[in-house]
Length: 160
Image (cartoon, rainbow, N blue to C red; front, side):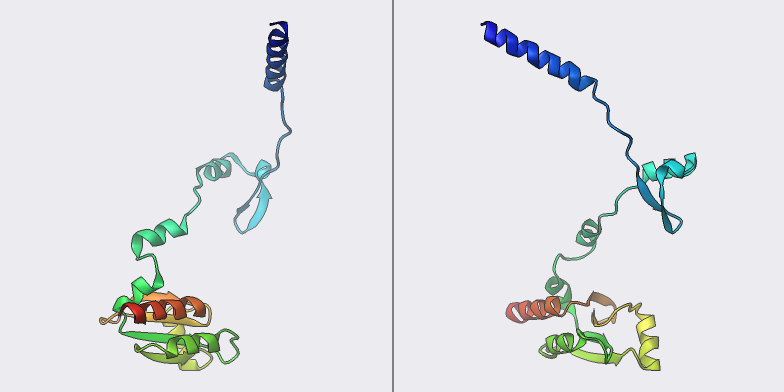
């Protein structure tokens, strides 16, 4: 029994020692007004604002607003608009991905003046970009990933 008592005594000593452990302050940097700065240099108001910040979960937002897969979203698509550039390395892959679809579509070169205006109208920030439109002309889905589009269109052809 003395062995158990000794172990209990050592455990109690370690718990007391653990209770007295203190760490060193950590330097935290965060972005404010366009650049990163140490929180120690922020005023009280900005620190309070930092404490209230919440991390935005994009996947949860998309899950609430649309079906989970691209193929599910393009089921009702009647047309597509394909935005491309001649110098875009991924554009040929997207062009071949959408070529196999029975959906009617338009290809727009964003390097042309008219194409640039149309890209601005649809807030296109990168190429390749394909936008799927419903029968009323509203946007149903968009993607800039040729593999995703190819797989989604293949799934639709199997389902349809």
